Amino acid sequence: MAHRMTSIQVTQHFEHPAEAVWAVVGDFGGLHRWHPQVQRLDLSWEGRIRTLHLADGGRVVERLEARNDAACRFIYVLVDGSLPLAACRSTLAVHSEGRTCRVDWSCEFEPKAGAGSGVARLMEGLYGDGLLALARALAIR
Image (cartoon, rainbow, N blue to C red):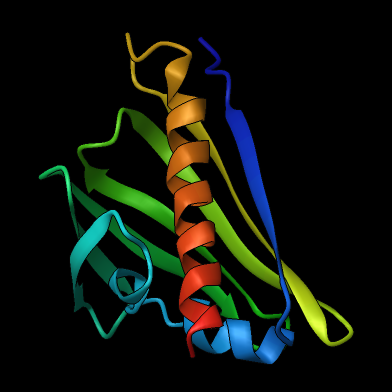
């Protein structure tokens, strides 16, 4: 039986150069410094595995798959956790637009059985909240 993958993407524009934004988002172990729903984060396996401790008490384990500093992009996969999805692969990328930039945060996933259609909205909210908080964090730097 073929599983249907769901894709979402959230985009945020920043009045900062791509390098400045990548310096913050490109830190795989630094998500808790700007994402309001991540209370703390543990890194292991030479910085390639991160365990996120969420504000709602949930926990998410993710593994860094690929990183390209020149392209300001990394790809990571969900290993384990409390989110209602399986087989999740995410990409976080910063695209230069001259003196400004845009960040695209996207993922492709399978909702867990019985999770329903709200999973895409949940992920859009998670990524959207994160990027809005990132914009605020960069504004006060």
